[in-house]
Image 1 (cartoon, helix red, strand yellow):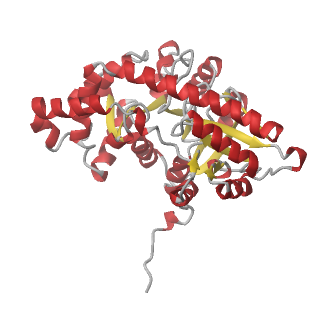
Image 2 (cartoon, one colour):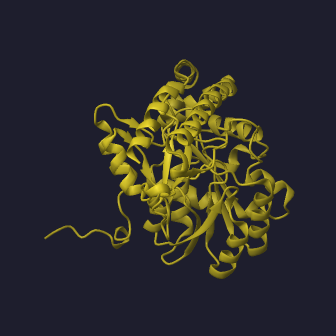
Image 3 (cartoon, helix red, strand yellow):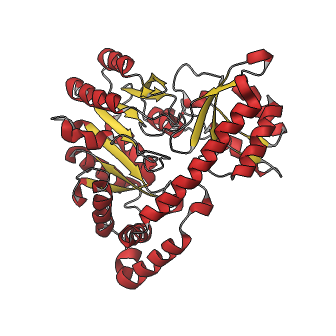
Length: 397
């Protein structure tokens, strides 16, 4: 008799992006598909020094079981880190998670009952769609434009569906790369308070800006909106700015939600690796992060500029996109101009034949997928490979 799996798996499929990665082992492939930071950007010396200090100064704490809420020295350093972003949060006002993706999973576990409405951006982070569906959410998409989620439409959706929460990536989102304007961020907070609706702000890319810093986070703007703080949950991560291998993220929310999330985390992994937490704490304490961020921003800015110029040069009016101001991604749409390919699934197959990988955009939509869209990452290829890879895309189209 075959195994009988849980019915909640019926509406969840394996990630289309993960499946695509199976093709990337082919020799000579230039990949614009991944959402990874460039390993060459990791501050290996600084991390090594942090590991050594953790073992020299706090070996017992670093190698032992720890509190589910997080390793206290790291929580203190994250409090300081968030203060530098304009957010006053005490060490006990956050829970350390195994990457920010665990924070999102904990929100799903604590907030979603089967059939509950959840609003996300269209498009949004694929793993979030899968996670929320796993817990039985009825997911509703709010459209975006060049300035992020369309707040007027979002207001209508909140009023009509009364969702458990709204999930947003307002700063250089994955996959859209969009930056929610300051005016819209303030409006989102007004909606949260007026409709008593939780806003989940996912912010793994906010430090990866190329020019002027982005507007303050939705969480930081709570100080200007009476009653707003209890209606905002904020997910942060060191994965894109320090190392994804450390798997260090955090969740900031009202005390009741944090308590429920901590309880669910106890059932899941007991606590995030204390060794990783102690390493991250030492790194943040060392003061090396500003220089690391400056290097990463400069490199990614150069690569984003190169990709934008190459796309215009090689694909011309066959593609439309907004030049990203930060993050790791271009979000583009194939126009079908002059009879060229307009279906991104077809285009991705042609691109693989030219030994370059891109990600079709349709899986990033919870509803009404746009098959003409695609995501390209400039993070892991240098300028020469970007120009060569986009040249191949020109041939593919």
